[in-house]
Image 1: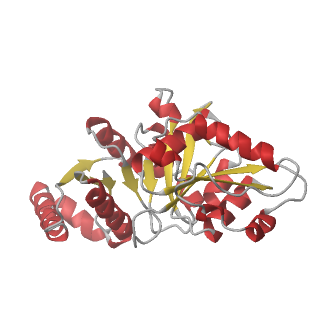
Image 2: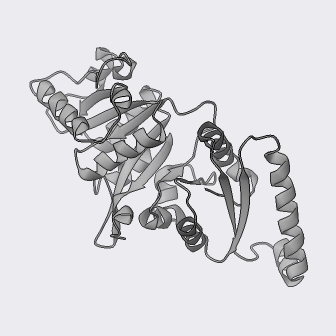
Amino acid sequence: MLATDLSARCDRPLERAKALAAQWHAQLTLLTVREGPQVPAEVVQWLAGSEASTEADFAARRDIAREFEGAGFPVKLQFADGDVADAILAAAAQSDSELVIVGDARINTLGEIFLGSTVEQVARELAQPVLVVRQRTRAPYARILVPTDFSPVSQLALETAARLFPDAQLIVFHVHEAGSEGLADHARSGDAASGSAGSSATGHVNGGANASAIKLRCEQFIDGCTLAPEVRARIAIDSAAGTPELLTARYALEHGVDLAVLGLRSQFGMLRLFMDSKGEQVLRGLDCDTLLVNMGARDGGR
């Protein structure tokens, strides 16, 4: 399901939604929410009553029909009224959609989009994963980063990434606190994500006395996940020493990551990410598309 206002600012999420629906041979539902008049022209239309609303709906359906002509998968346009977040949550709860796609071209950083926004409310309460699209759609997601702190939340993130994108390479990335080791040392060691697809959980880990222990811990974490053997064979392992909020974003940028997958959990009424207080900084730094998977909502702990 794509939440869209059918304007140009939603073009990037729309293109990704079309690509995923075609890739998965899935039905795509486009949900547009009418919040009420926002500008003078909309006030005039609102005062005109149901006839103008019907005309606007008809125009939207006509444009969608043109947009998806010959798409090869079913498309449904759904209208709702009221608060955007409430409408998305209600529509998602009543549908069998496995993924909700959102995007906001008005804000430059995902952190700013996320904090205190509609996206935050939806991600906190929605049972389905939420895909926040920021980049243009040029190809299917091929390289997916799954940061991990070895928690059940990050385990759910990895399993969800593997389920939705079984053909992509998954990179399990762990940031650990250590002396002065950093990503610069890792960059000289080579690209961990370029390992052979036929090997199991291959990759490079930063040098240091604890490198073997970190790699073993990552392998144990992967072993504890429910993964098909062919997916397991495409997982690479990497790590770096330093601060998660800096190194996760830098790693994604330097290694051409298409998508980052983050686990969420709700605690004490506040949204926490896989690294708790540092999660907000991680979101703020990421420049790629981001999939948010909420363990609390799935377990009923909203």
